Image (cartoon, rainbow, N blue to C red; front, side, top):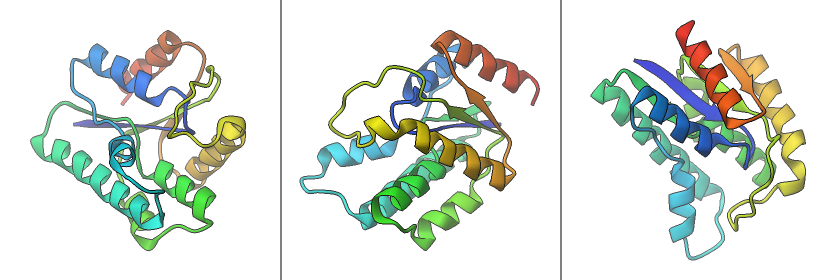
Length: 168
């Protein structure tokens, strides 16, 4: 199984790329659990909610790994939740940090936020996407995990990811 995770700041094209990549590879993809969770929450979210989101996102990933398809594509991974927690609450729980350290992807795709911002009530950082992108890049560089950066059009992004998959 080739495991691919999309990461990056909000509104950087992760979901669109996940959908297009899944179409190209003829597989299903794992959506971002946070969106589902937060739209059903009838109160402001807190740090414990991020732990729940992380746990449920990881459970979805683990399920696909157990099923054993040729590819796993996930719209988000633990670095998203780690940076979100650090930015929102100035701390990261041991649970989220542990899930981040344990995750194992063959390729992490860092999406550059060079696309127009799409207003959404769940998004919080319209003016801060470039700064957050640099935090993602720095974290990935420090981690030693295999990653590529994609930018430009969806077609260019998709082609770059498919080329990287061919090299795995």
